[in-house]
Length: 445
Image 1: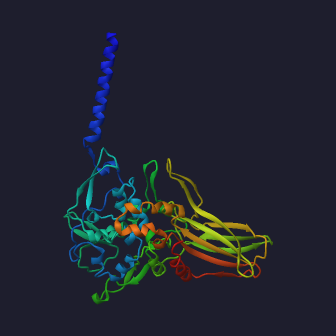
Image 2 (image 1 turned 60 degrees about the vertical axis):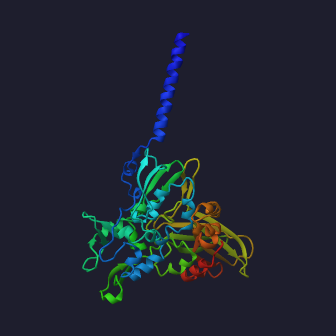
């Protein structure tokens, strides 16, 4: 009996010690530096605080635009400049489970843009950031989202800001260091990262890796080659009298689905060209047609980036009066399960230069022609409905628009349309200009 009592006392003591240890661990701060939790991950911390730039002032895009006016206007139409005001992003950010500080490291990537600075993670947990106020917070710069300084401004050994440039032989009013390769590789810091924060929270962007796989087709090409097309012009306003040089458009054109309907008009001038093209139409015997599409222009998989993106291909069968008889469709993209554990279940995306064949039987009835439509889809309806639920948690200026997401936020773009006459074998393609005029009017779909 005495032995049992002793064991009971020991067990109670052990349990008490364990409980106290757990409470101490849970409630006593134990900060771990961010770089120890995410070693080698550039996205884990914003670009260090940038002092005012000599000859420029605060390193805001609006100040860069005083001299680089044309580039500034291009950037204002870009996805980068709308990375913070993106309605889907704002809804996602408002979720209770959102690791906001990590998400913002790519969407407002400079420390000047942050009201608070994450200096460590309590117990090394990303859910418990240790934050301190940022005395150098610049609210105007915050609204610029992925701003010029994200790529072009850094701090030297003396703590002074300087501009990273790609061309020499210039005489700007600000310090400049030429490092074209650093600028070209900067894209990969956000657009080529896959990381699992927990079992159901995964970032998966492998565009850079996909480009390397396509090296045999796109030798000496990188992100800049397509997304910042080369243009001969002066970098600065005409009043400064500078000669023309090889420059790059800064519209950062992507998949043709902008963040606002008003931005459709800027897609083609900004350099947009669809990755997918029609390779051919063929009538096989008398009972089927074969349509071939190709990833002609994208040096990465199509689509790339956000795992939810996909292509929808429609075949609409028309009679003599151009009335639709029936419709077929296929999906090209990734399929993911997000719960209980995030995992990719399939992937039939188009590889660079890959040709995909789609053969369909001609439906019964008096079919005269078939129309192929290809949509680049960013947001499915079921996901859109889910996003709208988080409107009330978002900042007030975004709430109304998130509640009516389809009216304000393009979910998809029609990027290819072609009609095939089954009798004459003639093909009629809709121009890209006409497609984007259609896209701008597709509000509410």
